[in-house]
Each structure stands twice: as C-alpha cells, then as structure tokens.
Length: 511
Image 1 (cartoon, rainbow, N blue to C red):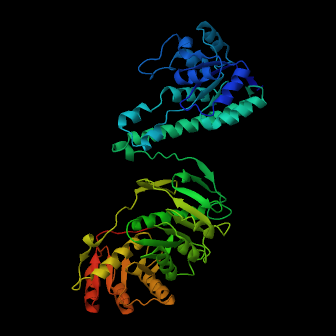
Image 2: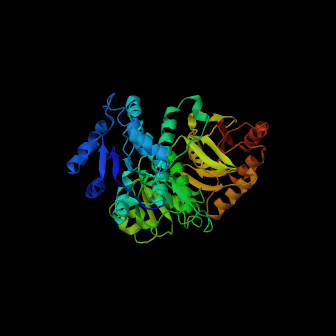
Image 3: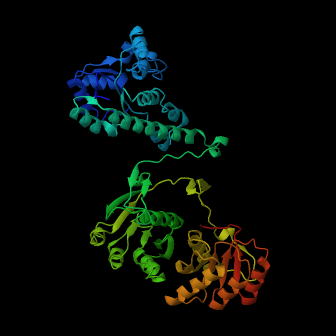
C-alpha cells in the first residue's frame, strides 16, 4: 500500500507538554486540525489554525465536558473506509470530512487512584471519549494514524518529518497496537478499582503492569527475561550495573524480610538465593552488619544486603571488604557513598517508602495462581506456652526474632537464633530433621555455641525427633505452629529435656 498523507488531525489531550513540535509540523504542512477545550487553546497559542470540534459537529460540549467528541461526524471521520466506495459516498452525503490522524491521551485514572483521591474524583477520571477515539482510530489503522501517549510525540514528529507528513501501513499498524495496549491497561486498572470488595474481584484475574524493562537474561543465559513494573517508584539506583533477573528475585526477598525489622534497633540481613544467610540486630548498624556476616561469611560472598537505617561511613568501610552484588538502604551518608562506589559493578539502591500489592501472583501449569501476601507475624502475645517450663523474657525476644526469619525462609526450614542474632538455618530440606541437622552443623562450623539458643520451625513437628536433637544441641526454647496429631509427644520430649515450647497456631510455609 502506498504512503498515505495526513491532511487532517484530531488533537485532544490531557497532557500538553512535549506537543509543540508535533503541532508545529502539522501547521507547516497545512494539516486541518480539530480540537477541544484546553487543547484547542494550547494549539492556538502555538499560532496554528484550529477548528473547534463543536464547529465540526454542530453540537456543543455538554454535561460539564463529559460529552464532547462522541458524535457521528467525529467517529465517522475516523472510521469510514477510504477504499470502500459506499463509505465514501455516505461520508459525502452526511458531510463527514476524513480524519487521518488522532492524537489523544487518557485521563490520569491510575494516578488519581494512587493519590488517594475520593471516589467521585476517581470516577470523573474514567475517560470515555478519549478511549473510544483511540479504539476507533486503532481499528481503522488502514487509513488512520493514532498517537496514544505523549511519550510517542517525539518519535511521531521524527517519522512524519522524514516521510513528508505521510505514513505507511506498517507505521500505522505499529501505533495501533500501542493504542490497544494503552486502552487494555487502562481498562484493567478501572476493573481492579471497581471490583474491589465485590464477587467480581475473584472471578477474573486482570494484570497489566508497565513499563517493561528487558533484562540481560532470565535465571540462566539461555532464558530471556523482562521486568514489568516501575522500579523507580521503589528505588533510586545510585551506582552499579543493571539489576538482573536473579538480583531482582533476591532483592524482593530482602525487602520483604526487612519489613519485619522496619521498627526497632539497627538491623541487617544478607541473602543468597532468596534465603537469609545472616540476620542481626544491634545498637549500631556497623555491629548489626558484622554480626549478620558472622552467621555465614562464606555464603555472604556475592549476596544481597539490606539494612533498615542509613549507611554511615564506618559501616561502609566494613561492607567494602566484602564482595556483594546489591546493597539496599533507606539512605547513604555523603561520606559513605564514595567508599561503596569504589567497586564499579556494585549495585546501590536507595529504598523509597511504597505500598506493596495485597496479592502475590505466579505462573503455574497453563495458568496462574494468586494468594494473599503472608502479612501475619506472631509475637509474645500470640505465643501459647504448652510445656511445664515457660520461656524467659530473653528467650521470648529470641523466639520473636527467629520466627520472623523463619517466615521468610524456604520450607522445610529450621531457624536457630539468640536475641537479635541468627545463628544458622536449615533451608529447603525435604524433611524437618534434615533442616535441623543442617542448621546445627552450620552453626557449629561458624563457631556458634548453641547452648541457650532458641529454635523456630515453619510448620509443626510430626514426631518428637527434632525436639530431642535440638535439646541435645543445647536449644532451650522452641516456637512452632502446632497442629500435629503427635504434638503431645513433642511437648513431652521438651518437658523431659527441660525445654520450653510455645505454639502460635500459624504456619509459615514458603515454597
């Protein structure tokens, strides 16, 4: 199909920035411009002749501007087929001029929802005319070029400049696809807002996230990878190479774990393959980091580190001795940044406050599964002592710490800890006994004395063997959800060994 010139355009946008060069080009080529309201005024200020849509339709904007472009003359001008003699005859009969270019964006519905605006304000940002114009122009891409975002203005201006204000079918198809992507995303956000708290919210899973960021590759070099979402809303990247797929998976795990330690003393966690290999709280961030590193300095190599306080120079000096991939902090002191930036590829992320989604979604088989985020965590008030001996105040503090780490560790898991200090964990094992044995072996390998330590389990003990092994290792207190038909056997073992056990009634599997 030969190149098709643009002789007329409908321009009606919410955001006017970046529009000037495109308007100047249309003016230069003598394109007839139709517009409405504020956009019409903006175009006139650029010195370009413009015809009000009301003049085209013979009908004024009504209902406070809710109805402006919804008229057969406008949609007929966009949708009539230039290659169909009958359409051309009808257009002539009804005096409907062709519209070759549609430049329209959508009301900021998503931004209005995010702002916490009242419902009436949100509803008014549901675009009707704009989304209809985009769909019409995209449907008739054989004859019409559609521009659906201010992010496209520069590229479209460059395209029309190069092609003397004309387009090819391939150009129009490309921008039509982009318009349908915009309308699809927009409708998804509206559905998610309107369906909250209704039976429809569970009847269909609607997901639309952007922008899309291509990654170097997925988990392995032979796998392609893409991140969908706005990382800039959560992090400022201050230094280092682009985040990889595996980096992002670990960063996600780190951020979720550190949410458990957002309040309270300085805290540091070191993660590898989404599991914590070191977690500690202390009076200073430097001490918290050194204690976390002591948990497993071998696994910490190449890991992801997260802290809950600004990184000072003293902590930066210690961190700089270790090779790690990513460091996440709420802030970095001015004298700490140069120290940490001494390694070219090291990724430094300044974390911003953000509200996370209420749901988790992942692909499974030929579909997806969704669940609520596990936001529950148990503390002293939820602990139910089931043994003759109750945990001491220090042991309760250690149990609270241990269960937080346990919640974010792959099942089956056992966590060994003292107050404010992870000693070791057994992760992702096929039996709970194996997880415990792994944890004990690791703790001893790195010089920790388990006498007086506590143990957390993500699920119940089916047999008393874990309690017996832990007691022999010096563990004095245990936290677990309970619920096994043989709970009494584990309780009896604790009583026999002089151990305290509390139950929470909440399981924290993590697959």
